Image (cartoon, rainbow, N blue to C red; front, side, top):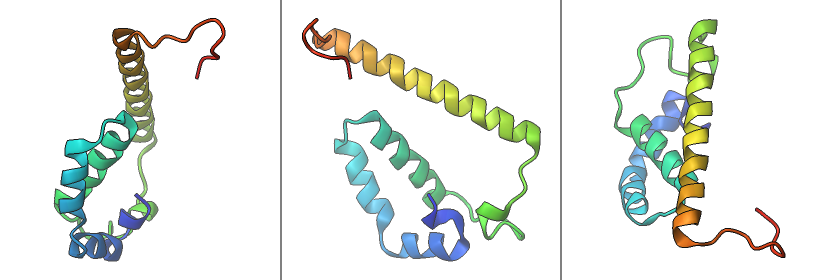
Length: 103
């Protein structure tokens, strides 16, 4: 995501055909964290270029209430991911045995 923070970085990533690679990776990848990262990068690549004054997204001033909302959404997404992982483990019957430490 740091590479796509600047307009030049986003342009370079698009020119290298990254979207096509990510599209294929997304079809085969099973790890939810990797899928989420792919989806976020794809959204950056297919989205419209930010307007004037937003060429470097690391320098954009984000209002405090928006920052708090984004942090809350990130926490909710992470919690949803954890629940899905736990449900997947339970469905596969791979709960750790007493001798096996939890991961």
